[in-house]
Image (cartoon, rainbow, N blue to C red; front, side, top):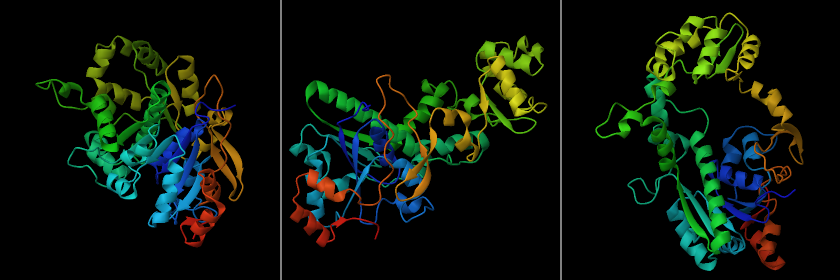
Length: 400
């Protein structure tokens, strides 16, 4: 069955993670995504470790499944003209190249929408226009540091750290996909396209402030920023007899059930822990009790007890065990798949469901330039024009 974005065509002039995550989401919902790559390929083809063949590592496969690839040399005028001709045929244009480079190539919002007013142009930037950081280069760790993500570790453990996961890239990529969906909806009502700016810094700073501004929201401040429950160094998987378990007991009913489970029913009437507000005031003591109470039973035993007593809990997965999580396997999130050139691989399925039906599983990620000639032909270029682009080294088909 077709996905909700069936019929929507997306031109993706983005690389590495934040832009490809955005277009991955659109592709997963049925959009046709045309990935534009440099002659050497998306940097992620080379940055993300080993694969069976050059430029086809696991991270690239998972971020770019279902997309089509065209590799064009945009340093040549003929390459820019070919790109603009393809852009004139699509509904959505996504890029994470810097605004000055967009203008130099003639693919900024003003230039493309002048020729195609219905186009939705989405520019993902490190920092928004109008401020002193505008135009600066950015990667995930740059944004994690600037937005306060690394600062939350300092507030918790005394040492600033980055989340060992490209959290800013993934988060902002999802935001960009969401905004494109909103713009498509408005276009359905008005017939008019949109220029969208999605700055990474501002988005991540908003999340951190929403979570941690707290008492500093008031003027004068009622206290320093920071949710001490979230920042507690004891807020982590809890050790059991043979591993770890992850719990969160927030309501009174959940906390009281937890106290019964650990054999400490007297804590239900302890003035420090009886009610939500009291537990918040005594987070350090409450979290210490949680962290030191599970060593007498195995993880499986605790999970059975917590499930029976309706205490929110889950297994603790390592990077390796997550692949074999029985729930993920049962719902089709993790499955084996044969790639036409890379052999047996693990494919990550779509996590969300539509009652009207989901798009079928997308085909595997493309090799560099695999669809270039067909994409140009669809944009109206003749066979002679395509052959000339090949001859002049503008159209690339395969890794150099």
